[in-house]
Image (tube, rainbow over all chains, first blue to last red; front, top):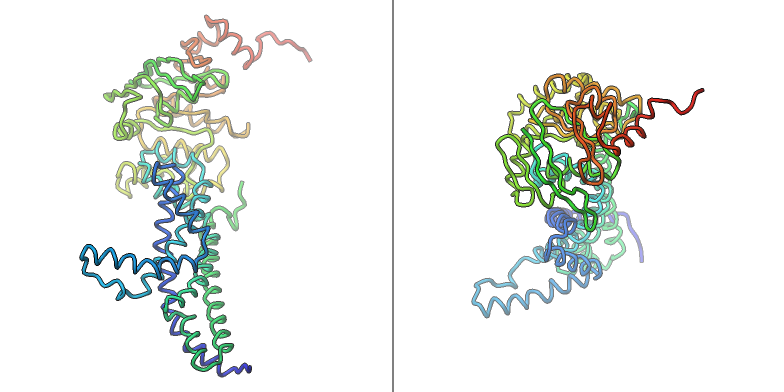
Length: 239
Length: 252
């Protein structure tokens, strides 16, 4: 086994081609999870009948099972199941033609939804009830109150945790290779197999993820500082 | 102008309001007194549908609602005529003073943004906060926060402002500035319903004082009467405890 700098660099450059794929999976699944997770948190907080029970079962399932098992379930079992359904009902969709990236996004979005739902639940609980009451009293409807008053406050307090969730998600998407997706990890695996220089390829991959995570971490730190600017006044001490 | 009839409210086994009737005329300053647990705050919150009363009617202007049967739309319509001042201010923490005031105008009442800003500035100037337009609640003292709360209410041009113990959470030296603003409002003819423990305010500013205990109205009347020769023994006892005996018990 030998580690050569030039080989790492070569792997690094070719694995970089997978960065857009990785970021695409991260971005789309995070956005989907953001919306679903928030709705789920609102449903749970207000104990909406039926929906809140469903979301509780969903959350405990997603949190209680390893993501690789979820991948197996969705990527390997769902298509056969759907295919059987489609064939029976004559739906003209060839399920095996679907780009695997859709499955990847589905898996990561769903598992991220469970995580974000819990984060938002805590954040919503952290906003004082009086804020919504005050919003109602100045003539806002409850949805308007959520949108203009509750959501911004909950988000501001959730930003640090959301940052962690995003960096976790970036790393978790590396499992997309098991759905034969050519993301950063997928490319590196193929490269390693071709050249038998697994170590070089994996070091390059580690480096890429490290850089990605650092970028996102700092972006979220900046965001956090901006959002909290008024709660911790820098020059005027709070009275 | 505001009339409440036979309002009832219970929390589980605890009956908090046991049938209360109140009439408030335009320009009235009605002060509600009473020991804690007497239902004063619940009454005020029921008027604005922050709590849902179990029984009773409310009439405000030409709106006439059954507390139990009111729909969301009717409640929103009613709230267009009222404003509420909270004990703990409840300023929107994600907005500065100016936007605390404009929020209800712009989002709730669809007032043009420019006009809303002007009205908000005028309201903040009126409560003496012309220097604090862009301060967030964390940068304001309790008294300043409550004055923003009052400006937020005034800017809505409500028919009646409901005050829920507006000075109870304040440091003693900040109570004065808030009471002064309220007094000014009263002199301008604003209709107010005030739950408070500030006896001097009640005596000097109120047009009517209501003494409540245990979910019922014990006695009501003009302040001169309630504070000097109340009919009910309970009112006497309560006032004696709060204000103290006219004859001091101790000499120093």
